[in-house]
Image 1 (cartoon, rainbow, N blue to C red):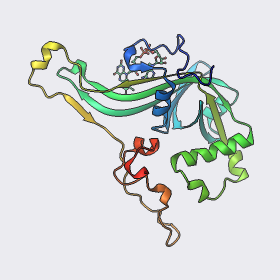
Image 2 (image 1 turned 180 degrees about the vertical axis):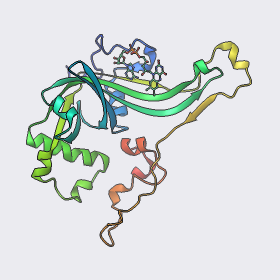
Image 3 (image 1 turned 180 degrees about the horizontal axis):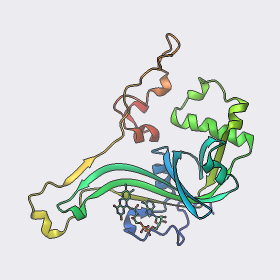
Length: 236
Ligand SMILES: Cc1cc2nc3c(=O)[nH]c(=O)nc-3n(C[C@H](O)[C@H](O)[C@H](O)COP(=O)(O)OP(=O)(O)OC[C@H]3O[C@@H](n4cnc5c(N)ncnc54)[C@H](O)[C@@H]3O)c2cc1C
């Protein structure tokens, strides 16, 4: 695939058929959604049985990484290389219409396809694991103790180069049947956000340990997707 292309290739598996106007293979839109969260669902098949595992992920260019214990069944199954379908969903609002049928949900979602395989290269593995911490808490790697060889060994890292990906987004008010707009039924959108709370210090915190400045974006009341996208008010 052309790395410079602004769009992922669209094939039979990634062609958005249902409400295609909400879909997009634009790389920038896929990245923006992937970068607004860090929880995904990874679908894969072992011996004909589908599994969908929720886990954390992070992105570097077109590579998506996830990790876990070397004893994890999911990670062991994916070690040899396995086709996966990874989805990310951001819930933005509850959409209330004038009929039950037209109730909906505002969301941003991504579906990405690729082959997952174990990352064996120690340099890539160390860099990627550090990047996970860095992605969530920029500057934290400089403060925490470095990863130990046995921790590296106990961790399996999976990487997937995105072959195809689509974003799908619903925004705006409900779409009712024209004759229903006259009904005296409340309709509209209830926005939904994941909001950061005030940090709770570990009861075993070493005395006089201050809250690090790299946690400033995680300010009480900020929206998680904006913190992760770097667009939160406290980020600047
Ligand atoms: C929070 C949330 C709630 C939803 N609620 C409903 C619901 O109640 N009913 C309903 O019918 N649909 C709902 N959807 C949309 C749903 O995800 C599917 O897009 C839809 O059901 C069509 O599925 P399909 O397999 O027929 O799509 P198709 O258009 O046939 O899918 C083809 C390809 O389009 C892309 N694609 C499809 N859906 C998505 C997606 N959501 N994100 C990114 N790429 C996608 C993929 O590449 C996929 O392989 C919801 C989505 C979200 C995120």
